[in-house]
Each structure stands twice: as structure tokens, then as C-alpha cells.
Image 1 (cartoon, one colour):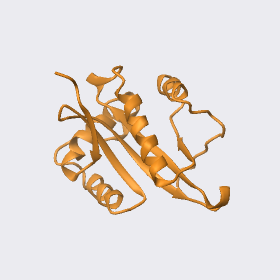
Image 2 (cartoon, one colour):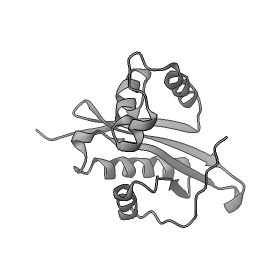
Image 3 (cartoon, rainbow, N blue to C red):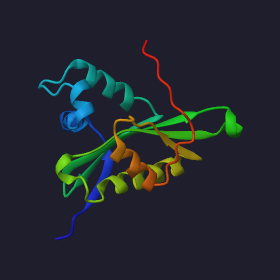
Image 4 (spheres, rainbow, N blue to C red):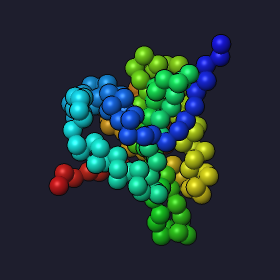
Length: 153
């Protein structure tokens, strides 16, 4: 039997599995809450993402089992002649499936979606405390061309 990886838009029923993946690393474990029922903020955020035509929350299934996720946001701006860019965030592969090429396939799918939407660039941010993730992103062709900054509100 061949493994079949498929992609689809996430549904509300996927939220517990998505939140478990987001929490399944040292940084995510500090900021996510994996209890059932999920805190209301997750469902509220899902509803806002799902209702926004410029947002896609995607899941990947391997032989019907949810194994990965990412969020793609299409950002319209005036520079680059009114260009469109895609921001990819919250990329996760279920821990038991890491190192099997699923992450690269998640990105290939995200790149295809961005091209289909008319984007000229895909961007992402990653925590400097994730050196393996940075190496992976660089292997996919990402280049650290800008210095990102954040300010708590």
C-alpha cells in the first residue's frame, strides 16, 4: 500500500488535533492550552480565519490521519506595483511523522496555493530558538533578507 498525503481546508472538528500539534514542541508547550473542551479563544480564532477570504488554515492527512497543518495569509499591499504576498505561519508536522518529508510537501502545497492566488513572494517568521527549523526553511530556498521585530501591546 502506498501512503497518500492529501490537503484540505481545516474544519472546526480538526481544532483539537491542530492545537495538539502547535503545543508539541518546547516553545508551543509554553503558550498553548491542550484541554478539552478547548478554550473559547481557539474556536473564535478559527471562525475569524475560516470566514476571511484572505486566510487559509490547511491540514494534511496521511492515509486519512491528520499529520500536518499550516496557516496561509494573503497580504495585499501597494509596493511592488500593488503586489500580493503570502505569509505562512503555524507550520507543524505531528511529532511521530517528522523527518519523513511531510514538511517539504506542506511547503510545496503552500507555494502552489500562493502562486494560484497571484502572489510573487512567500514569507515566514520563525523563532530564533528553532535552529533546526531555520535550517529546514533555508533548505527550501528561504533567505533571511530582513530583520523582523515585534513589540508587545
